[in-house]
Amino acid sequence: MSKIDFHNLDGQILRTFLAILEESSVSRAAERLEVTQSAVSHTLSKLRLILGDPLFVRSGQGLTPTETALSLKGPVRQVLDSLKSLTEQRPFDPRSEDMRFVVAANDMQRDLLFPQLVRDALRDGVNLSLEFKPSGVPSVSLLRDARCDLLLTPIPPDAPDMIQFKLFSGEMMCFFDGSCTRPPTSVEDYLAARHVTVQFVLGGGSNDVLRAPDLPYIPKPTVTVSNFSGITPFVRGTSMLATELEFMHRTSLRNLDMAPLPFVTESLNVFMVWHERSTNDPAHRWLREAVTACSRALVF
Image (cartoon, rainbow, N blue to C red):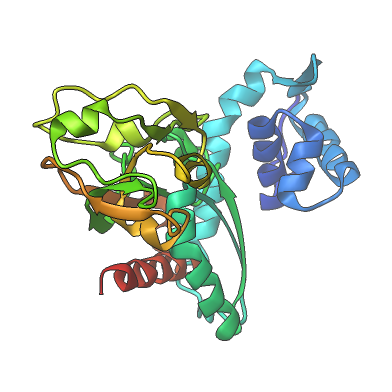
């Protein structure tokens, strides 16, 4: 390999490299970076010339990284984090910033917090763009590899470089159609009922967060849906039950009746999680403060 002239590298080239590496596709990288495919291809050609390595080879429908590309992932991420830190002490005004964030959350956290956050941002003249992706049972790689900027989950990944903050706590409740059935009054009634539950495509669901010491077992669901908005159509007009967080009575389960469960459960905590590299970034701090403000409105 010829000697690398690092002066030919810049933040945009490195950012493009990471996008291609994480998306395994020039077209998806272009979509993520909001540039044309030709711009991404041109940058990749330039980087190949600088490094003297193909970096990616075609494989099936995507791109496979070479050993050189894989070895560069960590160092490139560190360089980009260092470049970002140079601007962390700059004057910051959310009304003059073009802020774009990717948030990993399921539809419960998304619908509880972010509609109000966006309304507040629009009212205050903040130029904010949000992209949501499913979290499932989240892994540290979601944040560590910068596939999202912020994570909301009741099951936070645990690692030294992950920072978590408890947003709110709530009780698990029974949701049902009061025109068709009454809520269960005993553990036996609850176990004998038919249930609708959520199981996310990426893993995790309602049964994973239910902590009930007095419940001998979790009943097998009659219907399993992939998001919370799918619960109501199946519960309405039937005697089936759903066991979900109380705050969902304000969003996707607002058209169902709600009652306490006939047994003791542990409160469900929902956390906001981010990577330590984002802690001092002023735009990221603004987002965290906005999410926290919306979460406080849930319980007051």
